[in-house]
Length: 164
Image (cartoon, rainbow, N blue to C red; front, top):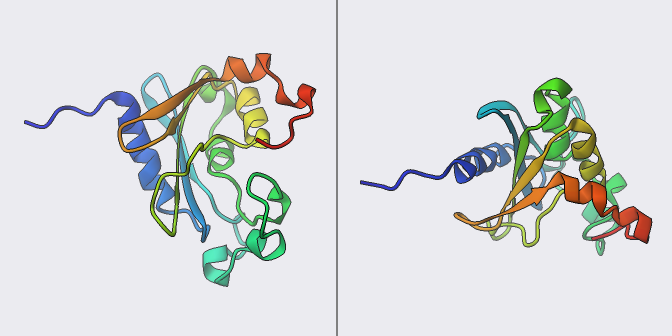
């Protein structure tokens, strides 16, 4: 008999399935917000509703205009991040005290994104949404657990850190 999947990886598996809908040519990201063991919302990375996705354009606008930027230059990216799309789809009172599960992988290798973590803007939104923990997949069975309170206490912008 197969061993039962632990709860965190169960929700990360769902986030990974959601990531399959992402429209970015370079990376696929998916998020699931859960509170009291109930899925509140999901989100994947993609262009805003009504705008053309990079997968439909056939090229990445960020890579075209800022080919050397890894964790910055988001204004050139067409996608709304998966975390943002999940939060947009949920009511704040449903997210307070909840957990966000995040999975990202590269489209070229299908390997999980190394050192994946919400960007600084998503961190601010996660804080304001009232989410308590973020789980980020490292590999099929391992993950990083982030206490959002740590982001509040260790404000990277007060140290001049704008990239990570």
